[in-house]
Length: 122
Image 1 (tube, rainbow, N blue to C red):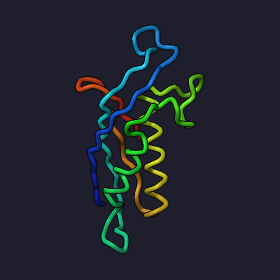
Image 2 (image 1 turned 180 degrees about the horizontal axis):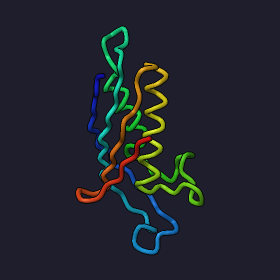
Image 3 (image 1 turned 135 degrees about the vertical axis):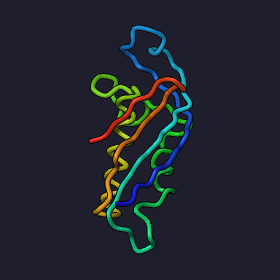
Image 4 (image 1 turned 120 degrees about the vertical axis):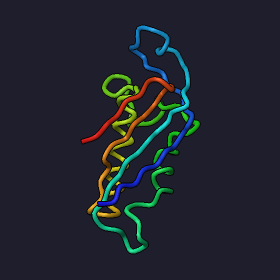
């Protein structure tokens, strides 16, 4: 089994509309993603999955306002760290499995500040 990991940092803004404190106001973060993937077979190039594709999937949200993406909804899926990390995990896992049927996303960790983070895995 091969395990690959990628560290990606992006900057984005968001609003958490129902938050009782400051987070209900427009603000931004330096989001830090740590991704772990695994696969039991390599593709024809010799990869479990190309590191560049991981970065591209995360960079979709770089220098953007998260509330503007259709995957976030103020009522059912506000752009919290918990929802953001789950969405990135699911998009990445889907891309991995489409590219390499033996591959899967193990977990994604998302830090919104140096001392707070959320992780998602299935």
